[in-house]
Image (cartoon, rainbow, N blue to C red):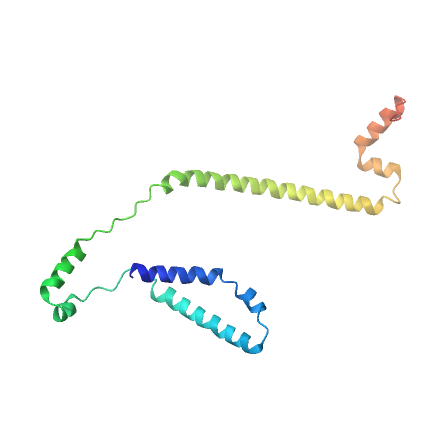
Length: 169
């Protein structure tokens, strides 16, 4: 695929994702305008789809050198063929991934640990919320003894304050 065609395909694909079709459709007031807008959108989607499928091939079709020799001449075509075959496209060598893969894997392990910790904390908080909601329902009819059964540390603190004659002021 030629560079310019690839650029066109990329631009149309990106444009299709960034066009606010719904926002524009809200601005239309007549039924005729809505129909025209709908057909414009369909046409755009069709062209975009064709560009993505037709021009997304990895390898270009092989050049039929004999066809060009017949029409242009052997000498010029041989010169282009030699130049074409002498082009070496460098292969991509990934030097970054090996450096960051162990770091990424370590972060994934840390993420799983944090997720487990978060789930446990979430369970604890949900239980606490349920306890508070239950307490809220029973608070108006609960006696001090029932409350102190659920919170023995407060009973101890309350008893200590009574024994020491400390009334909070």
